[in-house]
Length: 79
Image (cartoon, rainbow, N blue to C red; front, top):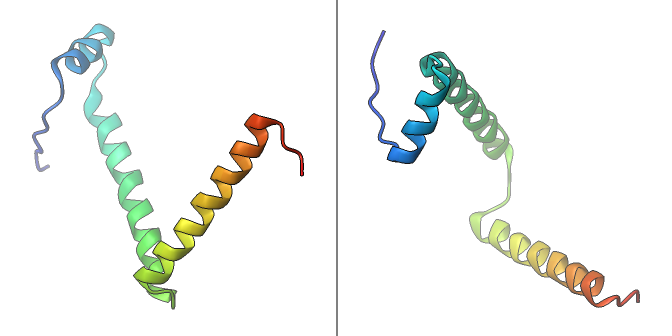
């Protein structure tokens, strides 16, 4: 099996050691889940007709809409 070296903050290392867990299987599993997510994302993107510019514009519209709803919620504006 191949080995991969990662760097983590000292505080995280101390917290990990506290539990005496073999982290390798957990980390392998987390990496595998992330890879599956990337594969699924690639599959979806490969079928998309949307350009990057279209996606950015849509993202801006969604962000503005969410911000407006949040402001209305916070200010109590129920219009």
